[in-house]
Image (cartoon, rainbow, N blue to C red; front, top):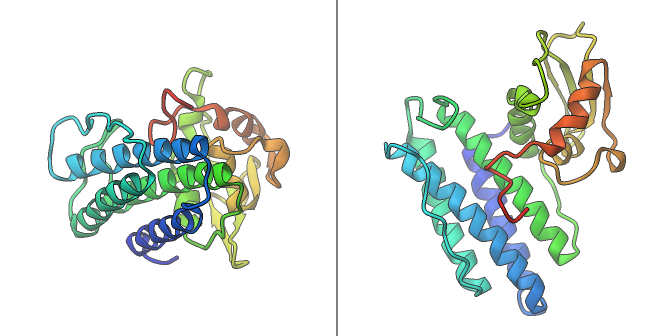
Length: 232
């Protein structure tokens, strides 16, 4: 799997290019929706910057949407680039709500936020995103945080699931014991759209069996602050 920091930069640049391609033709309501998503991404990147720099809470002030799409793109991209550079240079675990995280894991979390909000922006524009194997880091984050879906829904599963996911390139990614009875299989992009709540399970080619079937029902509704906000 490619370097997560390189993928963060590449995916961020791709989203900038997508927005600029359509910037001159978007109607005002769509432009406002996109600037709101970019403001949310800026908040997440700022939280990462504060946390890597050792600020105590890793909670950034909310960034107010200026309503100007070009400014929103520049502001987010600057903050995103700083967060990516700091994560790439970090050598120790980083304090984060929920517990310390390895720099690479936090980078995967940041890429997950970009995946989710990038999908929101593409949906607002009415276009399809060209996904790459960078989605593997997002899938890894979804596997790593499986138990978050059970918050408020009873006991978490005692045993790991088996995840068998197919990359956009056709590569197969496998996580968890091969003999596990609770399994999730399907395209990696669909899996990521599912656990970030960007598409309902009925629209995705994800198969889940055993306890994983219950997880697949709970996961889309989880309120992760990396990719959900009061406006969602």
